[in-house]
Amino acid sequence: MKASAIIPARLGSTRLPRKVLADIHGKPLVWHVWNQVCRAHNFDSVYVATDSTEVQEIIESFGGQVLMTSPDCRSGTERIVECIDRVESDFIVNVQGDEPLIDPGMLDALVARWLENPVDLITPVFRINTTEEINNPNVVKVVRRANREAIYFSRSPIPFVRDTPQEQWLEKHDFWGHIGVYGYHRKVLADYPNMPVSPLEQAESLEQLRFLDAGYTFQTLETDYRSVAVDVLDDLERVRELLK
Image (cartoon, rainbow, N blue to C red; front, side):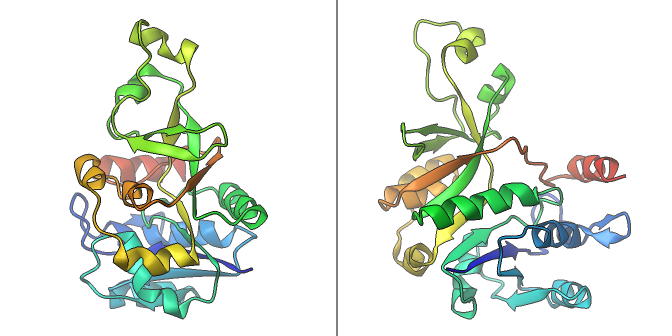
C-alpha cells in the first residue's frame, strides 16, 4: 500500500495573509514545511495543494509536485478531497501548510502505525503537562478509549476530574493534546462529500468531530513533538528565531 503527504497551502489566511509565502531565512514558509515532509522516509509522494499559481511556481521551482485546486475550498480537507483522484495512494496524510518545524520522524511513525493497522483515521497526540494547557482553548484536548481510539476532541478541559482541585488534576489523570496532522484512509476521503456538517463540529470549530459524528474511528499516536504553527506575526518571529 502506498502513502502520500498533501500540504494544503492557501494565500488567503485571515490572521496572517500570505503567510505561506512569508520569508524565513531566504525561503518561503511553505518551502520549510515541504522540505521537512520530504525528509520523512515512508511517503511514496509529497504534494502541495493550492489555488495559487504563485505558490505553484515557487514549489515547482524547488522541484516539488503541486496539485491545483479551487479557491472555494473552505478547509485543508476539502482541498485534499478535490484532488484525491490525482493521487494514487491508500493512505493520505494532511500536513498543515503553516507547520515549518513539522517532525519527519513523527510523520514516519504515523505512516508505519497505519500500515500495521489500516484504520479509518489516525492523528498524533501529546501529553499535556501544565494546568495552563488544560485551560487553553487553543490546545485541543482529546479523550481516548483503552485501545487509544479517540472518543472526543474539545477545546474545553476534558475529562473533568471530580472532587479534585484543578491544580491537582494532572496527578490524578493523563491529559492529551491534539496535533493538527491527519492521516486518512482513502475511502474516508471518498465519503467526505457525503458527510453533513456536524453540530459538534460547529460548536467546537473542530473539523475532526465531523468524522466522529459520521461513525468513523480515529486512532491516535503518542508523540513528543509539539506543534509550532504560524498563525500570527509573533509565531512567525518565533519560528525565525528557532531556525536561526
